[in-house]
Image 1 (cartoon, rainbow, N blue to C red):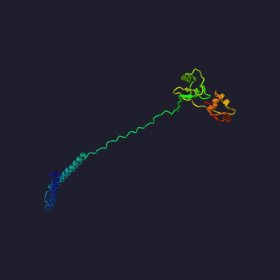
Image 2: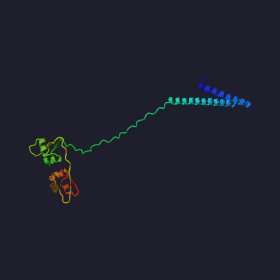
Image 3: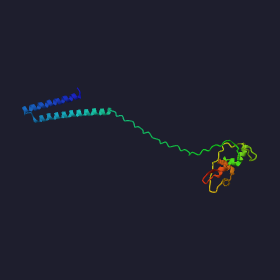
Image 4: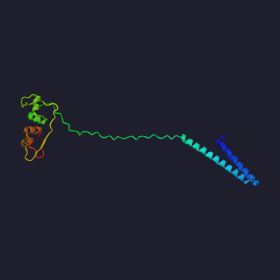
Length: 202
């Protein structure tokens, strides 16, 4: 017989006993008062004991359920650390200089000094590269320039009041025909120059 069955039987017996005492008490009041009180006290103690056992049993059942029930904690998810990508510092783009041709053909009006200034070289470099004895050049002559040499930056002059091709050439230490050639001018075009015009001088 289980505990629950024993509790129920005890409670039932107490109820029957109380009913019997109540019924006999009404018929026979000669029952000693002390006996009545003892019976009532014993019945109450049994009821309390049964209740305590029932409560203890329920508590134990709840504790077992609590212990056996496992709460799985969700694993902590590490927050992905966002690495800010810093832009790679780039050097400012430097102007790309054009490599000058390795060979040039001497044209009318060309001189070593003019060619050297046009390509940022010295007269001595051109003479040494081409094994020249003097600075005299011939039209159609092929000159080799130093490998890796770069053409010099172009320079311009702004025509002012009173300027003419001859005065402009003198101011910039060049010949008139060189000034005309650099600017694709002939004598007629040169006469039509006016203040504000741009002339290439190198």
